[in-house]
Amino acid sequence: MIALILRPIMATFGVLLILLGIPITPLPIPLGLPMIITGTFLLMHSVPRFRRAVMAWLHNHPRVHARVRAVQRRTRRRKTTSEN
Image (cartoon, rainbow, N blue to C red):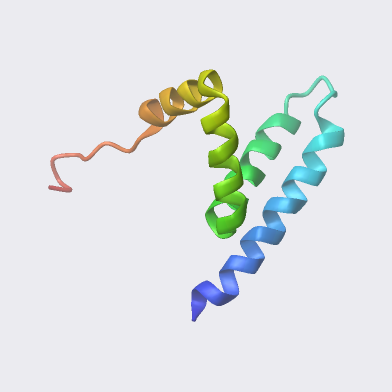
């Protein structure tokens, strides 16, 4: 039930972040690219068709896919001894 409410909100917020990040990207303060990336991640999480399209694009661009996987490995949450 909550997912039915949160999914469109997350998708809308992701689109807004992308749309706001595009014109901010050329400015000297580096805010545009993180906004675009965050919006893309939100859309990938909330829209399955978008996720499939991004994964297909990454499959066709192996160098980019390798860099994304490297970032995922570096930022993956590690279990601590108290979580075991």
